[in-house]
Length: 111
Image (cartoon, rainbow, N blue to C red; front, side, top):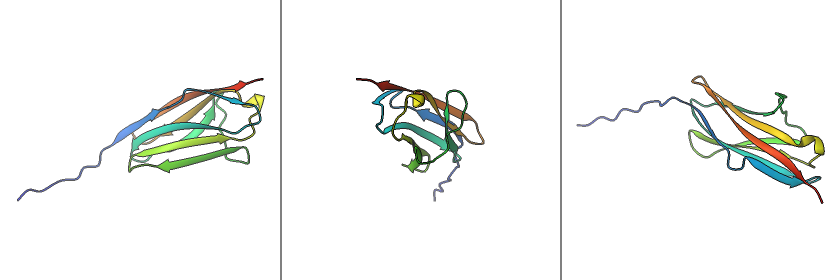
């Protein structure tokens, strides 16, 4: 008789950024995406490049969609894009094993 053992795999977060450079016209909504894999489950959040934490409000909508036991897609929707929104954004993921970050540069498209 064979026995199977289930092991908990512990992996520090790994972040993949599908689009590292995102452009959008002022006044529109834009979505930034980071894909995270981690075990145990990680704490994920967004920051501006200057270290300012982004908090969900009427202009910044954050969401996490689990695609598997280890994988999560982080999204940040910035509504009604302002000139002050341009610049770098970091998606950060931390668990007990380690941490990782991805960077996205947001620029405006002007007429």
